[in-house]
Length: 223
Image (tube, rainbow, N blue to C red; front, side, top):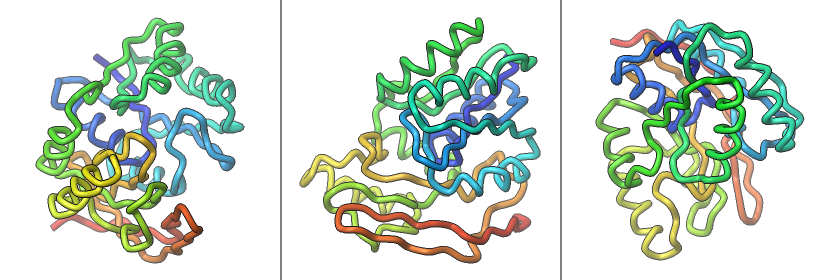
């Protein structure tokens, strides 16, 4: 099918987009919903990095602003998808029924098919497959007990998985961050013709959470 990928720049959307191509689908567009005030439905950290990712993949990017409310997010998604020459939409949803239901309403109303390669898959297996596929992502937000400033900028590799599994045992942290425990940013994937290099960033920590705000990015040729 001809698909648009709902693309936030996080690991889940990058991995789902790649898996859709492995299933034989064509990714015609990347769709990015942007809100400066947070979002009920969509991933929001480091949205300024998404155009670099689109350039790295050489896929047209469609960006639509949302006011961050649930209705605003849904209206923005509808505006972004209406009129596109596509058969369906690939999403990176894992286990969130709330996210699934809201996106499914809009996609269904437009008579499009929702492609969700990660939906309801075992999280440990999904993590392993993501790393094996060559998705290189880092943690850019921490919002759970056991995750502090030292986690910001950590690559989501197999060493990190071991520590996330320990936190899962101790605090119930999802190793895929599905409970909102952490947010991620993709630096490289098999679909990227170039990889993202972070030139500058700022870490911001409060008592219970923290973010890595990327302020400078370069695209680097792959060796």
